[in-house]
Amino acid sequence: MDTEVWRPLLHDNGSKIVFLVMDGLGGLPREGDGSTELEAARTPNLDSIAPRSALGLFDPVGPGITPGSGPGHFALFGYDPVENTIGRGMLSAMGLGFDVTPRDLTIRCNFATLDREGRVADRRAGRISTEKNRELCTRIARAMKPMPGVEVFLETEAEHRALLVLRGDDLHEDVAETDPGVTGELPVDPTAKSPSSRRSSEALVRLLAQVREILRDEPQANFILLRGYARFRAYPSMRERYGLRSLAVAGYPMYLGISRLLGMDTHRETGGIAAEFDRVAALIKDFDFAFCHVKKTDSTGEDGNFDAKVHVIEEVDAALPKLLAAKPDVLVVAADHSTPSRLRGHSWHPVPVLLYAATARYDRLARYTERQAAAGSLGRGPLKNVMLLAVAHAGRLKKFGA
Image (cartoon, rainbow, N blue to C red; front, side):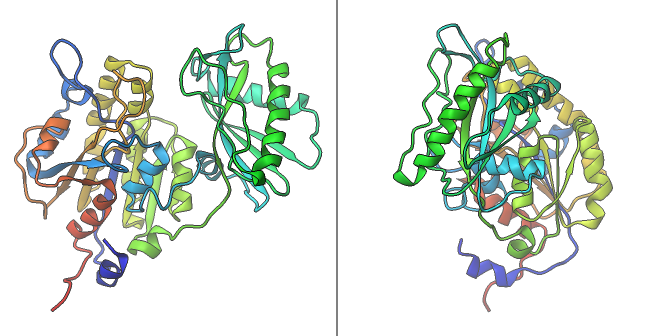
């Protein structure tokens, strides 16, 4: 819907909105009993609020389109994911608090394992520890030979993920990503897709050759894969767009990066799910909107570990009373995309959304699951609509027209 229609209707009534986002939550039926991870999980607390909620299925980008985490989160916050997409490098940079300049090209990179033939054996290097990541970043930085006209920064994000920044003149983002997306393939060359990106491409070719040499003796993390090239761009904040003083609590820097781009007050919490929920409950009094992010529903799905993903969902459910104790006027439980364990990656399947509020039309559905959500009153639509629905259920939109 055009913002010219609803923005004049916004008013501050002091209500509180909380978004609980389980990254990659959506799943597919497993063999045997045909349950998805969400259906197989024991979720008594979610089951207690599902009958008093409105449910639906929502497409992060569009039917059949498999989204990245960036577009999925932009959609969750009500920003068109196609018009507002940005490379994950910038999201990582913002999440880490890196001081980005107009001369910077930011890149998301994974430490990876190459076999003896130089093919990708593991795109995530066995999910090395964050400590090992720091050790490798330091080793590369110390051994890297200077490149004319280009400064190089390499910073640890978490586990196998890192941030690479090239700083120099005439660096552009239209370069091929080197991650082939599957194992058994050679890394893709960072070729320029346009004449303006030739300088970036040449710098990355030189850099990757050095990294391969520096890490050649590493048994696991012996290379890096590059994706998500991005330069900085500005976005209207959540305060400007919705009139909401907004808070984000997450353990992974990238999701804090998205939140900072949208003007949220961010808090990194690495103590686990319960600690994140405690942090939201403690701080929500000073905010109108809070976003709480759970990562491991996504990473366990990417690992193809059905049982581990079920366990994470159950851990979220066990901690849910901590969020409910904060008494939000609206609680939205959702995902940015689906990551079925069966597919070991992101998928195009719509995500289940639960909206719990006194103003909701109770669907009286027994559980919060994909199949139950398909029967809910919210129906099926674009994920970008959920934010405005939450604002409306919070009583923050006046009547339109006479």
